[in-house]
Length: 98
Image 1 (cartoon, rainbow, N blue to C red):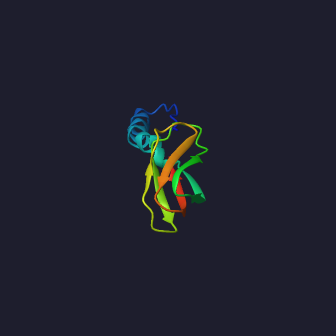
Image 2 (image 1 turned 90 degrees about the vertical axis):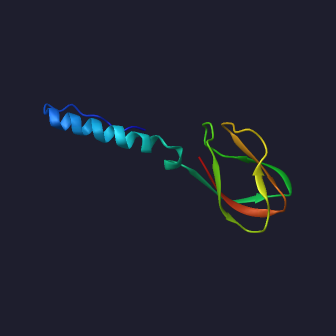
Image 3 (image 1 turned 90 degrees about the horizontal axis):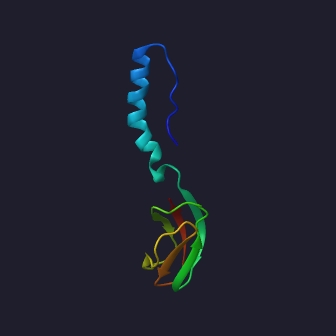
């Protein structure tokens, strides 16, 4: 998503718009500006495959809530459909994927 540019006859407005776009577009392009939040994901001990629903290559993930003490790590390469997490204990998590 990028900031739209409009045609202005005033050169100052054109320059101002270009400068704003050059500063705002990198922020809008950051994948963290449009994450998907997955709630109440039940993890079992061992490997868990989670459908992210992103339909785009993942950039990362963040656990936003965790119901029990467990070590959780990504155990397969990122892809555009699923996230593979390995958990040391059963727990329920909320997950932010982007």
